[in-house]
Image 1: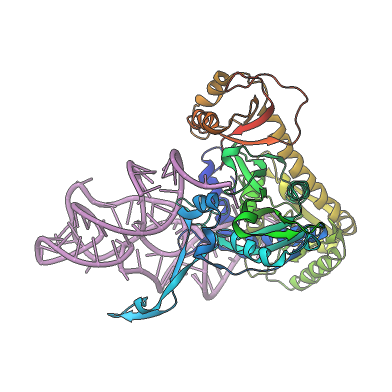
Image 2 (image 1 turned 120 degrees about the vertical axis):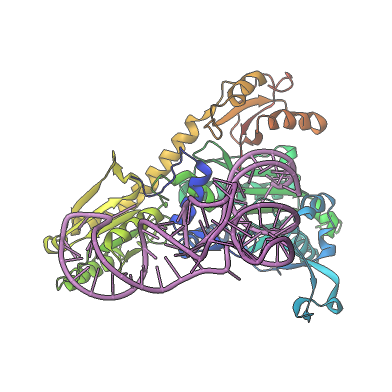
Length: 510
RNA sequence: CGGGGUGUAGCUCAGCCUGGUAGAGCAUUAGCUUUGGGAGCUAAGGGUCGCGAGUUCGAAUCCCGCCGCCCCGACCA
């Protein structure tokens, strides 16, 4: 008997929805395609924000903030960029409402001369500022970041994975030349890779996107890709070298040491609330989410087994002092976050609430534990032994001494489990496209686990690449990226038969 | 935006075919019992049946339109 009604094996998409709901992460809002992110979900985002912000600043970037609304004309400045985003833009056209025949409507008299778009990303309005801020080589590099919400009018939305409005961080930088801008692009990618792995326990493959998967307006796009439990890939972060495209479009020029005018080279990079979807699909199980301890808003939850009797007071005192001591410990370099759930609800209900939310350690303290000076707890990532719940008991002092270690071990176990899944499910033995068709073209049921393929290719471009895309699409596949770690020699391209120059990852994707 | 499904109590759903005063389980509230682990009994509260127009004496049910959600596709850093 699992805590969720649907299991991963029965129906993975349905299971995903169930986790979002049952772990109390988020719910749909009356606003189409937009989420209400609830405290447990937002708390996870705050942990992500806090740590990523620290790493971004540590690597030499400062935060700033640009407006939500961008003048419509700005978006038109870079051709590929418009092309990429025009179809999913929300537009603000009026500045006043008026009651017309008893119905509130945009006042026809109050139409804006120039509409605004709600930012889908901020390259254009930030580029405009950069053109004013960058005058001399002394102003470079300019390394900035903003935390913001953005909106893209998506046709099909899914909680956390693709919502119309989402929260993210967008870094924007300007540099004297390609070498410096590329170093920045790779720096951001490496921040994302290490952050995902260390902090979210999310093993990823960092690599370069093929030409047809690039950000609109980018010269080169890099991504980190994570493997979900259904074998699909999730792009969990991107970093773009924009070349001088935006600099040309927006006149970001500087005077070099010799006095000559040069175009700046820019970058942009971002991760979003989508990462939480990746955490769910990587670490969730049939009892809900298993929240990695580093991002769990509450790492140790204590459920007192209150029974409405006089000894309840002693029990509460015991739990309160336990929390106080646990909070003096530190894990992952931060104070431990322990919490007593003193809500007036049945203990068993509270226990299952925290199991579904995925609090890493859930302690159930009864009068006998208090009297005997013990702590009984369950370790969420290893909840069951067979069908039965596995609980552990330690002397209070031992539990306190070991708590931080247990959290750190849990983090490692979650990572190792996901890392093994990733490593064991990237097949490198496909040498022809027919092999790919055989593996991905036949399936017993929808959503069957197929994993990824790592194949050699000759990096075709233009029409030849388009044809590759079409052949892959027939199998619902896409090229995810060309991993950074490449061998020294290559076989033949599985698409063209020409000598290969690179290895790429192929997978179904979110 | 195309195909399919779906929308009835907070949640999961029955009722619709064959029109006749709105149902169940869980949850909630109250009381009693129970107390080393997802409790039991009793009672109570809770619904403009997604929205709008139509057929009809009468519509959750039939017809038409619209909207949301879910799945597949298209699209998508």
